[in-house]
Image (cartoon, rainbow, N blue to C red; front, top):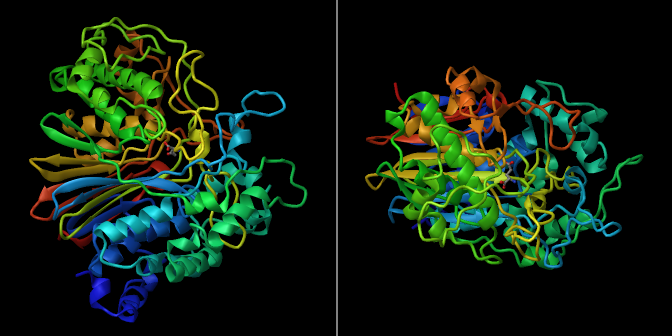
Length: 608
Ligand code: GLU
């Protein structure tokens, strides 16, 4: 029997409201990137969200209960990448059932959307990416809250109202503005200033918030409280939903706004029709491990899985570092060619998932890797239904999709051995830029993850917009079992670089023998079937790089915003969070030491 059923509602509320949200939830003690201990663990982007999860674990919550508390708190403290206005994907290991399951909480296109969603009616040409992002048109029906509800129903012990309480407390009291939040605000200041609701919340007095000042969000606290009272119907058909719909149609433009963003299509019926889906996880075997990931509508599980299947044909440990990295880059290059061609929302397009993840297809693609030379991108997709023979690599004319690069990933485990690996997003940093007036949360721009037009003329594109369809994601929440027991939980933000970050971290841990903290901290490179591989500056210091360049690998460092090339951004790739289960209930919790200002790892009972 769940704790909510055993205790009267009031008792449960007191338990969570009073005992679980100490003042320290604001000046939280959890700050380091690594923690080891027992009783459960959390790694998330901010100290407050990690502390909220730990508080729920201490009170007897499961990993699912704690995950909802973390996600809701991130809606307060990580407002430009997560929250009620977005969606995400949850991969969950249920210890009692010995089973990995998933929840697909991806946003959907409104029913009235068609393939011309992002075409300018005046010209028939696609809108520019920045124009589409900052608009009502890009706002998908949010799936976040339905994911929370489903996670609690399937694996929780607490009620939604109870696990929202830590987030309400942080929103009411406020939290300390960090250099990271100020920098994220700077990158968005021009477009946030276009919307009165957004500037009122995030540009106090028309200025960037000072580092060290307190950011409060009483509107969001009230929204959470209303959802706690009324249930998820408050959003999916109720008055919170009505406010979302009003906002996307009647954009809250600031006096003197210079942009004329396009309004959106969402109706209350779209919210009422929203469903979170429970797809079977993807599964591949790699070096004797069972790797579970997110199935389409995300391309995360299929692309990480295919790349691992390709790499499974080689012994990276026997190679020198140049060859091992060359194989990592080439496997990723080939897997991305297949992802772009074949993966979309499986309810709308026939995704050959089993073939993409078959070891035979991995062999067929692996045979294209030339140890003496990098392939020329874009390489053409393979034929997953093919004979398995080695078909020479063909060049392709396909464009690479435009994709955003910001969200967050967090991981949670509990004392029973349940594990949650959960990636949250509103797509771009700052989403659509539109805060729902008096509700305290930003709306996503997830629909810009659709291809606006086919990537290649004459070739079917699985990721064109359609009514009710989910745009293809790259989110890759991952859980790895060893000998049937959880060994690793892992994920990252970073748009399409999510896939390579998860892949590289796995290769670092499994093949290169790094510890999990080392595997996460190591410099990254992301090859996505493009002529040049995106790299962090520190990766270019790797002694293997000249050898890779001699093989024809090319590298570029990205330092500009996809929304505005005049805005500089940190050239980081991904912000990973992971857990490693050490046996005897011990967990190693590992986040980022420096990327995005460092992330917060914590355990219920630290090892002494
Ligand atoms: N919209 C991205 C995706 O679904 C995630 C956002 C990000 O990390 O950039 O793949």
